[in-house]
Length: 75
Image 1 (spheres, helix red, strand yellow):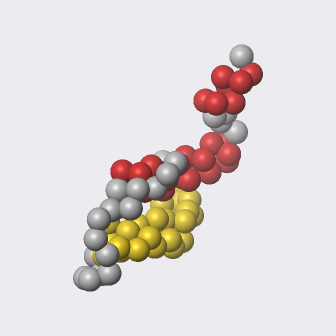
Image 2 (cartoon, rainbow, N blue to C red):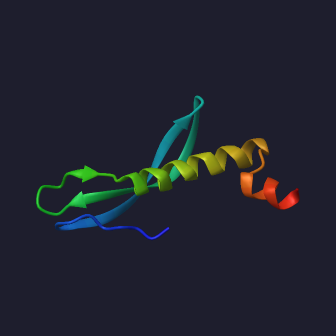
């Protein structure tokens, strides 16, 4: 996925954060944009998808749930 940079003076920030999914903690590399002028953090739909995919991936691995792509390849 190609990341589209918002307009203005912003930088991409990555930091470790814990997200809870189904009452379980999962540590991910959380992506946010930071406005250089005022320090506000925000995400885009793309960054939200990247962040959530990390949580879903860890959950699937932990419980042995197959990914849709793997299921399609096997059938």
